[in-house]
Image (cartoon, rainbow, N blue to C red):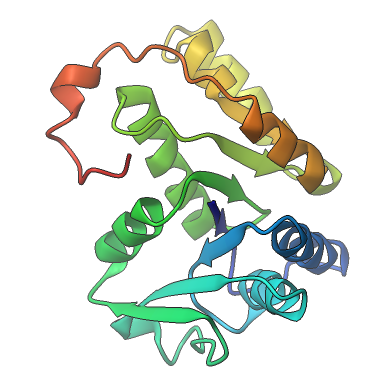
Length: 197
């Protein structure tokens, strides 16, 4: 099994986000679960990768050629794939993964999360996804998602696809029990994106 972790090239404020990234990397490795991530050596990306490697885990990085220098590609990974652009990066990360976790991060982290969440909503994949909600980082986002449901722009079933927990062990346990809801547009959506099932 491999889990794709969406995270950032920055560390955020304080030590807690780096600590959470390190804990997630260690937990994945100790459970024999491979890590797929954005391929950088800096920020929470570097922290999750370094922790998984230190615990003996498999770490697969995927980085666009244009970000090799800016994000400082990690040179010690099990595999590092250099791809043409962000679209290819996301498609490869999804294809190589069995589940997705978003650590606290910025717009890139949210963009990656929302894309795979949309794919799940459309039935393009049936893989579980989660927010690792460190110190309530995603509380405001969760309130907004509830607002989307109340205003009939989002189904409750789609909202409930997103697992939210502060503990990486519980996230993985909930992944094991995950049953995706029946997608409304699965047949029509199959041709919209690369096959990431």
